[in-house]
Length: 397
Image 1 (cartoon, rainbow, N blue to C red):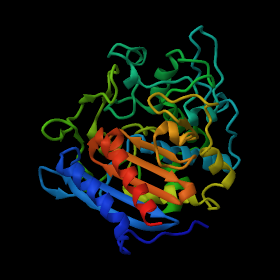
Image 2: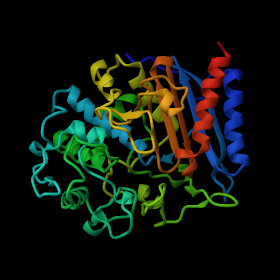
Image 3: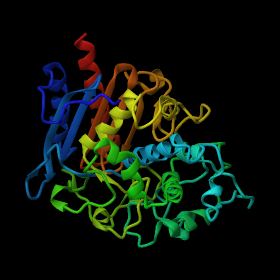
Image 4: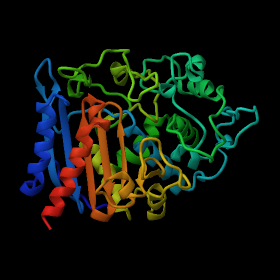
């Protein structure tokens, strides 16, 4: 059974840990790199730090709260990947079989026109040959011309239609031969729907969020007052993210077309890679269930596979020392990564401004949800927070 950790409002965090973390958060707020944040730290199954700081909505002075709901963006991938692995654990399908058995209509081809065999393992590890529209150099790239949605825009197409658009574009490489962060988790969502025979939202509820009591996590939010307003970094301070605005997290890429209103639209297709919303506390429950293992959610062998580099030693772009498992990155070489984290640490984030990591060797799970992109995903705040956590733990020894 999963060892429960205390409810979020119980316990007094140790001063040796809370003081440096609070300093990092307050500095990011004071320097106007963040508008608001929720940070949770659990060690050995105990919640040892919880903090809500800044504003969930700056204009109305609505304070950030532990119960604030965030648009998760790619944090969704971990939840949906876990859902798929629950079905694997139930014997519903195999990681290495051709997904064409379940999705015969999804048949993307190689650049030479030959058909390709894609497996669920390749979808989970982003080695399937797919890409993202937001990685394209301009608004006239192959995915853009095909009408592909990245799952964060206000596209009116269905998931099935989006898969047809994706499949119409030649694969970037033969599956299993390279790595590219991609729409693979959206395809995985369609696979889950087909196997489970229900909508992706219902499948996630049945397999993951329901069993773990993640009551505030799903694909549609019905109470806007609980949701953090999205901001984008700017000078002299972050500004509100506009509906339909495109913002690029990378040089040379067209960027992500954002629809903050999408999470309130029950008609929007369920994007397995980017379409969910939830609280930091809900997500910590999932991370802790996976970290602790031996739970009713997944057998230890599948959790071990999640945390095993699936790339064959390939380097991830702009992430030296990291490989990729089944749903998140895996630290292979702390020296190359310039990181105090242990070998095998799991890590990923979300484009609306989130970062998280799990260091199983240290019994550590850390969730940092913010409402400021991209500082909260890939800015100085992320490394400062990491270093504050490890520095405090080292000093306490």
